[in-house]
Length: 173
Image (cartoon, rainbow, N blue to C red; front, side):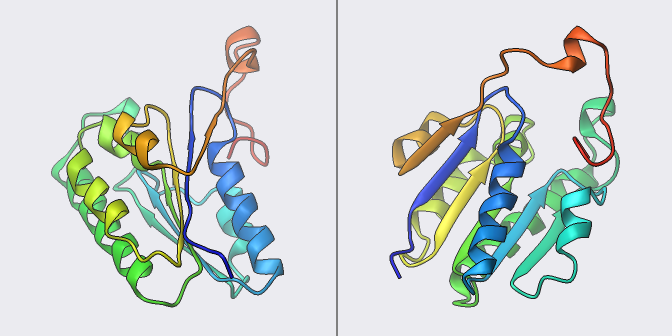
């Protein structure tokens, strides 16, 4: 199989994580294994619950608690991000997965939890037969230079802003 491309899903719009999970589901239907490392997340969202019994998809959460945007960054946040990067790198080199997703990795860098250079080293040293998916707003230009596919989600209109809605179970979480 022709695996080994680097995907980048970024931008202000909704759907980056959803696109990555959708790709994992599609791949599982063809017998391909996916590892998903979710940075900054400790809450079990619907997509994680839905995939719990799918033997082709492994999901691990690397967050220390509630949303970082609502609190100060702690030493625990740094620790979880570091562990997450190490586990994603191990998954890439394990030969157990066809696809590895580093969900919200761009936000982890933007928040200062990880160094761009450390993540870039993982990207550049990955095996060339494993697809790698990176998600999150504020993608570094270095990631864009190396990506084979970039999808930028653009928020043209969002009911968070127009109607003041909060996250709804089954739709946003």
